[in-house]
Image (cartoon, rainbow, N blue to C red; front, side):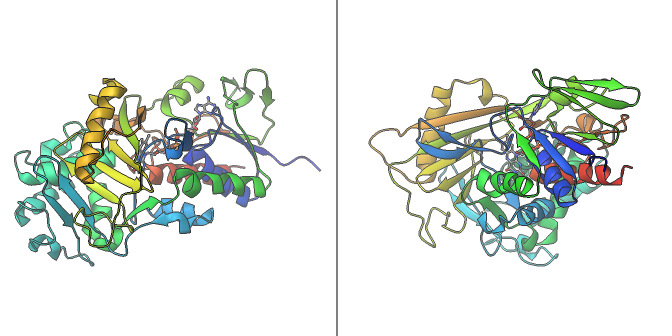
Length: 429
Ligand SMILES: Cc1cc2nc3c(=O)[nH]c(=O)nc-3n(C[C@H](O)[C@H](O)[C@H](O)COP(=O)(O)OP(=O)(O)OC[C@H]3O[C@@H](n4cnc5c(N)ncnc54)[C@H](O)[C@@H]3O)c2cc1C
């Protein structure tokens, strides 16, 4: 009997893993090759020696609207590791004034919460939210800032934080159409679509380790420290994979799924067009002497159900508390990525102390993680460069959050891209 055709999945981020899980399930002979010593890519956990804790490279938040991401977590048997409140509620604090509030969208598609001063954002008017409908009519070249009033209090308290959190791109350059897709899928559909979910035990436990186990249990193979250096082509197909000391010949029927970020993909595939302009995210992890108390109804706004707080008026946009570690995020962090880690640690510790009302005799240990290439800049121009899963080479398929899924570059997009790539493999003769 002829051997089964192989699928080589290069990259064990969420796109590669979601693709490999699907392919193994469909009975393919799957080989995953990852350049790093661990899986997860931009969505990974690791043991930090300075803090002596396992931390994530950065805070990751899902919303219940992220149906593919949640279905993937279900598929790998990790749904119980996602934590969130029974109803959507987003606590916020203004770091300048100390004012705190909680945004509570209501159920159902009629957004009456905007009429309730107790539920909507303080100092905002219902008509300012209605102005968000301008995003729905935005042209393909429009940015978020082109559509909305930067002088309205809702800008600083909603539109700007939402844009950088969802698109990791400043509103002055972020695509209005892409932001509308986010609003339409979440806030416009009522609270059931925008309940926040976080990985209770860290990213690896929710998104990565169970997927690796699933691939292996299904007979797939995953190898680490295997960087694909070059692809040799023959006619309209990839013929050989160069991993340095190891060369892999692709037989007729074998496939290559490239689930690597844009710079790696364009270096490996001639003439591939892809978004190349990347935007950073900076995270700080601070190890406190003890877990902060978060009793129900705490005036801090955070709770055990959802230990998350949105911040405005400072550098941090949001923080998550997990046991004795508080992790703070700055998205679209072009300015901060070039600052020294010491200076950032100082600023972010002061913001954490204010947000959690901490008064410690000395500053605790802080780890700064700068992800300089966190996502591509989600500008109108870059969206046009997102390629589909199929390539001109008949046995080469693309996956990754940056490919043309129609979704912002997030876990949701990475999973959808992995599934699309698996579908192309299944459909090809
Ligand atoms: C700090 C931070 C915060 C984020 N916050 C959120 C959030 O709140 N919510 C959300 O949904 N998303 C968030 N994201 C985005 C999310 O992490 C990404 O969209 C997702 O992880 C991308 O997965 P991927 O598989 O497409 O790419 P990657 O994770 O980049 O995976 C690509 C893999 O390919 C490997 N590789 C590269 N070159 C080669 C090669 N030549 N050979 C072999 N392997 C190679 C890499 O090592 C990597 O493991 C965040 C990202 C960051 C960095």
